[in-house]
Length: 258
Ligand SMILES: Nc1ncnc2c1ncn2[C@@H]1O[C@H](COP(=O)(O)OP(=O)(O)OP(=O)(O)O)[C@@H](O)[C@H]1O
Ligand SMILES: [Mg+2]
Image (cartoon, rainbow, N blue to C red; front, side, top):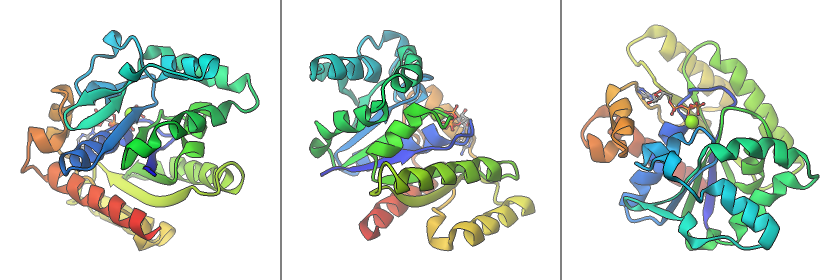
């Protein structure tokens, strides 16, 4: 059975996509069979792996519609992006929040869909939009593990609290199997005192074991995404590559424990 990890935070621009894409691509290059599902209509994960969402005619939205209507979907949903497999997204996915709200069991559809092929992968990573809507909830219902990428600044604490509340509600009601693996501090500026202090507060609030290694701020991350390649391939020796390796290993290790 594949291990399903969702990266989520209701706050925008916290590094969800960056961490999801780079961890998936890193582990794929380590020989793990990885699938990355882009569950955001912004399709940034799709772009980051070098696929133009405007050319995605059959993405996660179309496949879910087929699954609901015909109980089947097309195999060309799965794209190969380096060593990683990608289920891409496109702007059509923006309709899904409204459509899922119209049926009572809407948030279970994605879980049932994943169930059809999750055994073919060792790890399935899901990138979610910056919201607490039905699409994000669908991912939380389908996953076994939750990782919350968060910036290390004062305001991020608010988004974190709301995200944790959604986690507790989901694990109490819809998905008792969902485990919180930890926060990933992102765009971390190790040199500033405030960032170090906030990081310490994360450890106190969540417990040290629930704070994964940080991803330091590194312009190479932005460059890699604009080239449509993962950071470890774009700049193998940069500090963000070192960090992604530590984060990926931390996630794998914690999944082994959880
Ligand atoms: N470690 C880093 N150093 C420098 N820039 C970074 C780093 N991590 C992410 N970024 C940049 O910050 C921006 C936001 O990151 P990203 O898209 O991963 O966040 P997100 O949480 O997925 O955003 P959204 O909520 O819109 O989905 C991107 O332009 C990304 O390239
Ligand atoms: Mg994103």
